[in-house]
Image 1: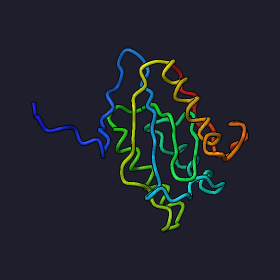
Image 2 (image 1 turned 90 degrees about the vertical axis):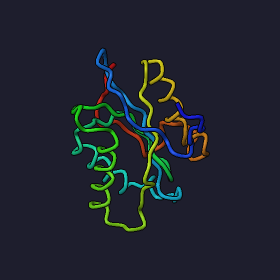
Image 3 (image 1 turned 180 degrees about the horizontal axis):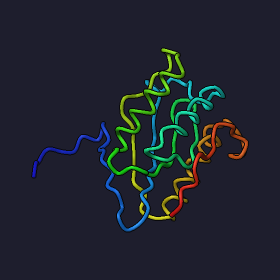
Length: 153
């Protein structure tokens, strides 16, 4: 074992699948330099299209913020890693979006959720992001959120 401290500037990756129950991952993806282009109706439409077609992982609930997005996802194909799926849908978005100024940060943050309680806590945090940022008063008023698939525990 190394005495070198962990490098926390870059997230650790590699979601281990839960063989005893569902695997649901909480994922955060940022725009490059947090440039605020993600919370947009056309971006929302394209992301929904890409996520609907990128079925190696199913997107459940999600919230788009100006400079980042949060989503919950579950695998459908164990042989396709979360990292590969994220790279794939980012490339599909870029192909369909066509705006060279809409660039993703290369990396992402992911956490496998351990329980339905963990999911509930994360979802409340995520859905209240627009309220905390002063973008809306009620989280239900934020137009850049939704659900593609219902992820079941």
